[in-house]
Each structure stands twice: as structure tokens, then as C-alpha cells.
Amino acid sequence: MAFGLEHTPTAKENENRYLYNGKELQDEPFAGGVRLGWYDYGARFYDPQLGRFTTVDPHAENYYSWSPYHYAANNPLIIIDPNGRDWYTSIDGSAIMWRKGSEDIEGYKNIGANYTQNIDDHTTVTYTQNEATAMTFTGIEESNFVAQGTGTGCKIASDQMLANEGVNSNGERINIVNADVNGVATTANANATKGINAVDNALENGNPIEVGVDYKPIQVNNLAPPKGKGDGMTDHFIVVSSKTETLNNGQVTSKTYNFFDPRNSQFGTSPANTLKINNNKLTGAFLLGTTKEIPYTVTTVRRSR
Image 1 (cartoon, rainbow, N blue to C red):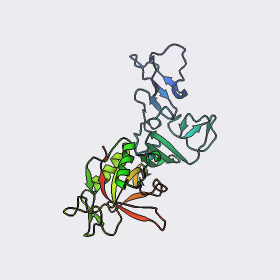
Image 2: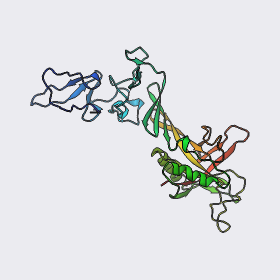
Image 3: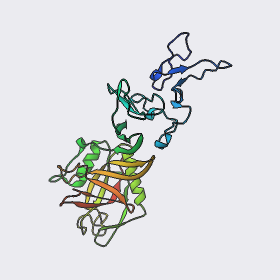
């Protein structure tokens, strides 16, 4: 069993008792015939029925996002925890563990101070030594990027990127900023937190999300009623592709959002295309740090379906 349960739980005389992860199964009956069926890990006892240790991890303060009783980051198929403490990688790459210190371990090699673990197909955790320092949620891969072209505007290209990932932008439209008389984004409005949460929820579920941005000094295309049918602010559409949360003692201290910009096939998926939360607004830039930098303020969030 993945978490160490026996297929046949009744112990047999003289059988091998060093089973799951090579640890000894403690299955001698107590008074009344009760068998705990725990494994002796030295530092702690492990209960395979729960997939948890019976006492708190001595390094639990480094992993606030996990239960202090969890086993192997809840991924026992590729990770082992030989004594309830530290990390290494096996020579054949089939197992990962964390262990205090840098001493040689037979069958394992030290992988240095940093390690990135795949939690699922869209979530990774980066560790610096034994502390989780970042978590990244990815909604779309570069292979699904679409650039706009002649007859294909930014909205159509952004919609196609979402379609490539099996979602669309037909959900609720959430305007998250106010605008001045020229249609330039100013302050965050009452829906700003709702809109940012929608972006977070989409990415944490492995989906991209489409947003509109403002960057022109005056609105000329997406005019609000009665002159048009737009929101009076949005100049361009992009796809928020991923989110990286910086962690400190298990707490999120900052968030950085990457986006795919359909305006340019060469730089459309550049890691420099980023947004951050400033004064409850999502702001950033395309071609960040260059002479052609275009500053963006997110104006509207289009929930994915």
C-alpha cells in the first residue's frame, strides 16, 4: 500500500518485519490482543492507517502549510522520510528525502541548498535548505501561447490560449479599478479583492485567466456607454499564466504573477512579463526594464469557465 499498510495485516511468525521504507513494523499485541501496527522510525512512530506520524515533526515550524503530523509531503510514491527529519536524492533519482547536514549517505547524493518539488501537474514548491520558500501555480504552458496577428486581435488570441487549456473567458466580468475622464485607471475599487481572488483561484486550480489592462493615456477603442459598449478603461487583453508566492515560515509574504501577452510572439511568454499587487491593484509591465517597456494596470478580470 502507498502509505505502508499491509495487504495481510495479521503478523506471521518469523516473517520479515522491516517493511515500509525498511522500518520495523511494531505489531506485537498488547494486553487484550490489540495490535497498533505502527512503524518505528527512530525519531517517531508512524501509523500507516492514517499516513501520519504519531507525534509532531521536530521541524514542523518550517512547514506551516502542512499538518505537523504529515508524512513525506503527502507524496510517499517519490519521497521518503527515513527518520522524521531531513532531505536528499537517491542515486537513481527514484526517491527524495530531507536530512539535516551534508554528510554522505550511502545510495544518496546531496542536491545542495535548493530543491523544487512537483506537488501535482500545475503546482511546485521550492525549498531553500529545509524551509519552503516559494510555491508556484501554473495555469498554461508555453506551447499553448497564441500571438495576435492581422485580423486576430488580442482578445481573440487570448481566448484561443484559454481554449487550448480547456477553459474560456465567458464567466463573470469583474471591473477592479476606477478610471478618470480619459479612461485611465486610477484607484482600486470595491471589487478589487474579489477580482484578485478570482485570479488566485483560477491559477491554484491549474487554469489560466484572462484580464484586461490599461496602458494608453486616453481611451480610444473600448469606450463606455453611451459612446460604446466597453468599460471605458481596457486597452488590451492578456492571459495570466502563473503565480509564485514567496513564503517565510509558511506564510505568504508576496505574490508575483506572470502573463502571456499576445501582442508579440518573441516576448509574449517572457518571464519578465510580471504583475504584482500594489495598493490593491495588479500592476506590471510588458518588456520590463527595456526602452520599449509598456506599463500595465489590470482593469478587468474575466472569470474562466
